[in-house]
Amino acid sequence: MTVAEAAPTRAPVPPLAARARGVGGSPVREILAVTARPEVINFAGGLPAPELFDRDAIAAAFRDVLANAPAQALQYSTTEGEPTLRAALAARTTARGLPTDPDDLLVTTGSQQALSLLATALLEPGDTVLVEDPCYLAALQVFGLAGARVVAVPGDADGVDPAALADAVRRERPKLLYLVPTFQNPTGRTMPTPRRAALAAVAAREGLWIVEDDPYGELRYDGERVPWIASLPGAEDRTVLLGSLSKVMAPGLRLGWLRAPAALRRACAVAKQAVDLHTPTLNQLAAARCLDALDAHVERVRAVYGERRDAMLAGLPAALPAGSRWNRPEGGMFLWARLPESYDTLALLPRVVEQNVAYVPGAPFYAGDPDPATLRLCFVTQTPEEIAEGLRRLGRGLGG
Ligand SMILES: Cc1ncc(COP(=O)(O)O)c(C=O)c1O
Image (cartoon, rainbow, N blue to C red; front, side, top):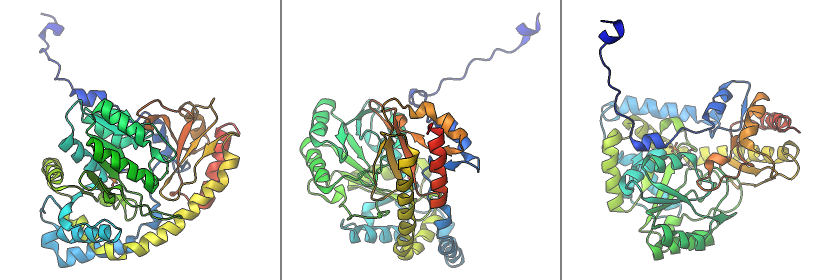
């Protein structure tokens, strides 16, 4: 008997689920992995500035919770969330024009989890989801993993076009429309009130859920606050509003929430039980203690981020090739640029990274036809001096 014949037979293990095979990681993740080198000025990540985290207040809150309520803070909690946090978040939402009861909210482990829960609660494999083009990348991933068909709705500088939405709803019979109406990721654009009202009217007339994802809304540097779609006539009973403490407090806390009509919220709570039972009690209680001081903190963050946005806007004309265009976001973290037609930002990225600077190519954000000349820049993570230096390097990398 040969050695080969003596070896025990080994049958292959069963394959991954189709939904896991079909959704790849981000195509730029590998290139961007090198941006972790400290010498790289990274305009690619969507990272809040760490020096602005209110570490003293957060540390004091954790100390206070552990000293005064350890049995509660270290114990299992309800799936819906800690009552003190829900009450404080509901009060903030109400104060911003959308009357909200604590029971209207489900606390989630980041707003990213809210997206996953909604996908579980609403989507069968093969269901259609409508999105903006371009769209937040990790939302595309959630919908892809749920086995949904993702269809981009055409739009303009103000966002999704209402007539195109009505056509798409009649043609595709989608379950939901996913929007980031304020300081969108990736474009930084904000949908004006009339456009929001028009989309709400289409959702009311045609029968459609709207998922309004708003992690950036409080980071406004100029202009007037725009009302949530969830507060507009016709949208109240069919809009899910997602919020997050990631961009205004700290993303490491992993605290978000969803505000949804009762039946959908209950289905999301059941889905959440299956995922993680509840969001960490300690983090919820500590964050609740920080909420009173959050407005003052956000005020400070806005002043700094606004300067950083202006620093990036000031440096772009010299950094990008002639004929490039970009927007001037009124808030948020991102700016969207389009280079002249012949440029391919994905192909150019390795050359740019050699100059120790990075952006995210725009193409992966598109569910429809990608525009290869686009790119996303995050303007909040570096100081104005670093931004100026990063843009000089970008200019060199792009061949300027
Ligand atoms: C549009 C959008 N939604 C959701 C998230 C997820 O945020 P969280 O940290 O609350 O999970 C992000 C994070 O970048 C985002 O840009």
